[in-house]
Length: 291
Image (cartoon, rainbow, N blue to C red; front, top):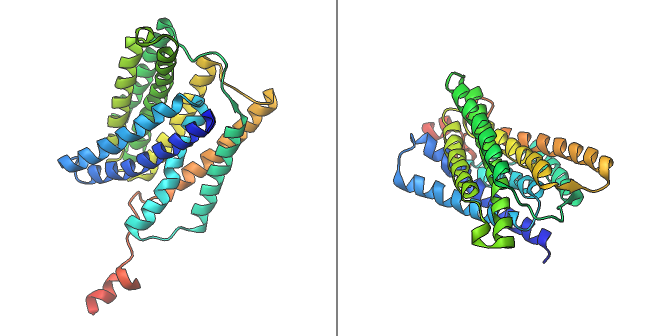
């Protein structure tokens, strides 16, 4: 199995872990963030997803691995069917198809730079400062916003934090691979931990009072976009066919983004609540009461 195959396989396992973790986080929010077992489940699943994701970054470009992370929403579809006993609509299948097609195009066009993904101390400091400022601004503005805007701002901040944490993780892995433990920047490691933890907490807060759709869609789009942009600027990651390839990747990103947002919207009803489960046996509640 080549490097891309490992990147894809590990990213798929990571996406599956994140999908189940998202459901665990939503249930935790529904219970007022109480319950040791709920916290343990959410943290364990998120931790597994993070570990698999970090290892995948060592085998593929940031753009590819982060884009594969959007498959979390595809794994959320069967979870929704099992949990809420709601059938998949034709629109859900179309959104899933758009996501896969866009992702496949990005995978086929992505080229990793031949140079190692190393970052100097100055670059790490600048990246950390800019990211912290943006995340803090989003979190502060969210305090005085309505429920849906608040969810979008917090989830967007979480996506930015996670995206930059992935970029820094790749740099840490590259440093360790090329120069051993002594070559690893302690600041970069600290920032990976800080942004990962803050991203998790912000993401958890974004689910409160907004359901699953808005936060999940926002973080699923902002995370890969921020990481891919940082990968191009910092690691000189490129695409095939030059300018034409860039246009194709932009189109693929739009197609995938459309599918991702659609998938997230279909995890809840329009008012932000989870779909109501169908009564067993196909009868409505009133019929069951009369019986």
